[in-house]
Image 1 (spheres, rainbow, N blue to C red):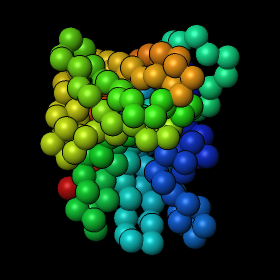
Image 2: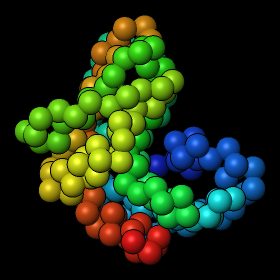
Image 3: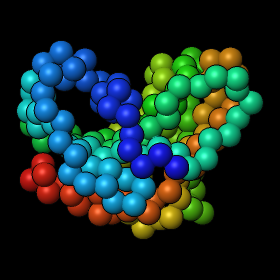
Image 4: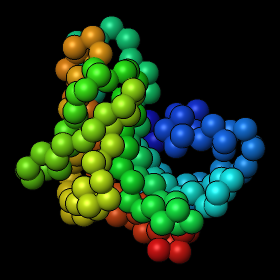
Length: 171
């Protein structure tokens, strides 16, 4: 498994066009087993996030881009625990994705272009709570071509990375 997530993938996931344009410094707070925590300054304030790549990706596809799972805090926007998965393909229009942590009931996510998101802050908080207590997270989705995919993430180090990013954002 990749231990370091490419800067390009992180910038892409964090909707960081403004970040890339302003060339602000990205700081790695630490790598905690399968998760890495980061902080950066955006135009609107501090961004703290943690990211991981899947241990296993399944599906009958010929080509696929980077797959990265992120949890982010933007304190100036009062936005915390935002969960997003960039899949490396465009989701089927109008489709949903799911995440299942261990044997918990799957949680539905909405999709837009190449990213799946929690439906609201309550959903994000629930996902984060389950991830802190869990061992693995399994995301399922459908590409615009109808390809079903399954991405399995280790949650080893999740809680330590979460603490590091939360401390960096004063949470």
